[in-house]
Image (cartoon, rainbow, N blue to C red):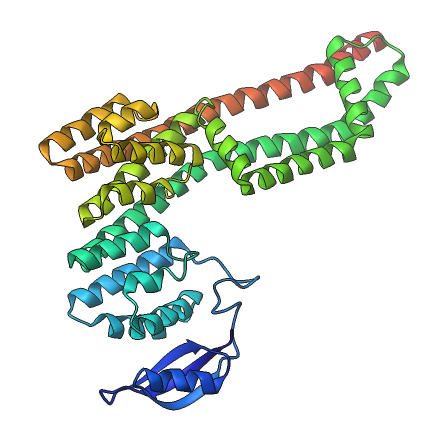
Length: 403
């Protein structure tokens, strides 16, 4: 449906600009008049990107940093006593990015009578269920600015943790790809030249050299098949991750991988406790909080376990009791949540757990990096030794024969 930029005069005599969707200018005009506004001008927008720039084919994904910046700016305006509509209009107009267009739509929805959380819920690709439910809880409790402030901190910390984990995993992946590339180049260009020299002397070659030449001939004959298999493997992984069943299988298995698995689990625990604390402190019902957080931990296997906890809580087992049955949560987490339930300080306990796991994730990342580096060095050194023995041993033999 096309969008129209409308300049209107409100019932209070203010001239404002809105972005509305409608079949044509006449239908938009009727809608404005019906809402008590007086249209001044209605122009069809020419720079539309897939319905407001949110679902277009070439639309860029809005970064978390943009959401965090918007949230903090909104908190500042609300704390200064600026009305929600005025704040949204100001933030939408000052932003030239794709987020600005979406904020204009949010402004229009709020202007038409929807709550802020309902307006945000119209854009699920931009504002997650966690964000929307937090806003809803803030609206219900009358502490929206405090909830938004906490949410900005949670989103920022979560994004930093993701970047740290990705950064720790990028190094070994890069090194492995570089080693594979160097191996293929050596096997297809370098070793064949030495093989021709060695065969010209008709001497018996050492075992290292025979293995090296055999491998080189195999790679040389099947280099396209090898590259195609590697490309197919990476494409297959991408397809697997986009499928819900495949993603669930991947998420379950990745937690069993040495070094990487504990890091993934600790990162998920940090996200779960931090987000659960934010929603629970906002006043959202526990069941709704658990179901919302389950979809935000970033791991389908852990998501299923959290949903099982929600079912257990609904049966009256308590949070700690349901967690114990799930078999996922460490004993320390279960004990602290049990103490929080009994003492009425669940939020404080969740905050302590999230802080603990934030430190654990940092230590795990440093430990992973420190362990990967020597492993990669040994692997690279081993490859160099094999190449050296394979090439230089027969050369020494040739030198002795000449002498």
